[in-house]
Image 1 (cartoon, rainbow, N blue to C red):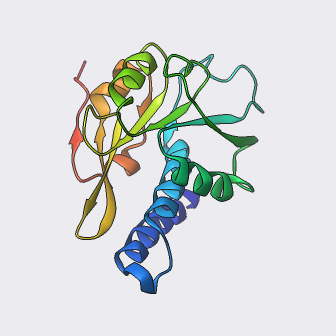
Image 2: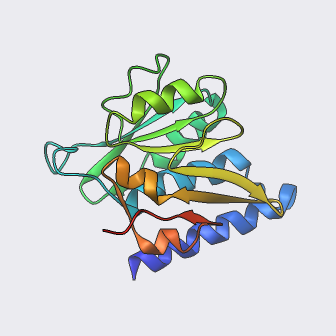
Length: 175
């Protein structure tokens, strides 16, 4: 039931962005909400969180306005017992303790290469190489694509309910 409310909230925020200035919700705020809510629909491998209270580390490269929105959006949010920590990352090789990495700009490809060495949910926006989740604006709404095959390579499992909301899904290989 809680998952349905979260999915509904994600769709409402996406629709609100479509209203433009009337809704007073910026694209960064919509994406920030999507980002922290994605964590509710991903399972990380054992050992990704050494203890039950370890915060979810959301790292941001190249998106200062979104990072500020994400700090506000996650301030009072929790994922079970876990708080969210948002931090800006300057060095693309310094992502090993991130659980979720949002990256845009000219360092995207290098950051994604560094992240693939770890169980990190990568989220991208714009041109260049795509992460596990990639944002797109479709009909003035924030939407996303999911590469579930890439998630499998990273040791992550994406909940089918999130997969069903994606514009398209590159499926993981069947065993």
